[in-house]
Length: 377
Image 1 (spheres, rainbow, N blue to C red):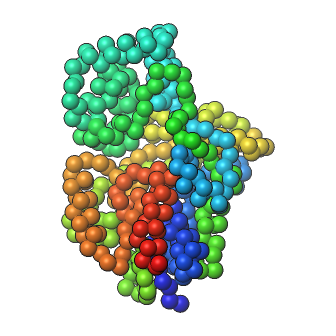
Image 2: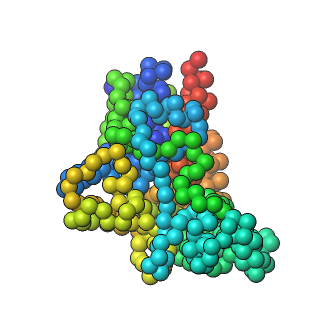
């Protein structure tokens, strides 16, 4: 069968484009993925022994303030009321993250109000005399002082990225807000957030449920790339350096690995995600997915947890490492990408970018409108 479009990758970027092309343009789409499932890193499944639904590639919380994204994604699912909270264990004590008034008071054993907390941290920051932060470490210290940085940020960052924080750009730490109140909701600025009521996999099944869409799993694009007969465009959502056969060298990626454990109790840690900030702890986080669906009543006295570790793995890329070297290398590949006429490269791996799910959906909708829909008018 001939197809108008070939989409490489069945994550959010590829699936949104497949759905739009198939249903709005009434055009034939072939979606392939090297994995045995659709959904990319958002894939969810049930643990057979506990009956608990979990996200195979780490906890994914949907959040957005974009009405365009919300109106689109809610065509395929309802969301529950889950709001995400992040906690960090340091020296056997639990602290709120992002750093808020509770974190500051608990860490320093004080009882400061918002104004006094600002003045207190201001003095901590001034001790270091950092005026123009050159890296993540200096930026973090310039925001929260050395003591909080070394306790809650430094070792966790090293475990997460495999780099000394002095080697990483200041921009990474700006993702983590600082609050002088007791707000515990991690995505406090998101108008909408939650977990799909029936899990993420159902979302992708509905998006790809069209007679115009054919899905092939366990299909490696690079093994069959010369065999596809496509009339219009190839949309590639894999690593950009791999697409160009690593002609300029490999981009660096971090990958997270998970070790699963079934525990014969109802609740192990009381929250969906617990970070571990100490270098002595070999893992970065423990996930307990039962907490993601408060609307479900899991009846078995069992819970399932996942230990998360981060490591360098160019074969299974998850997160780009935003060093100067990688930024320069990506720009070289980007120049090659702009010369492609029949191929669109995008998504988290194609753009070498750390995208949240809503940003990925928004980028896919924009790609459809600007690069595909206009061409077909």
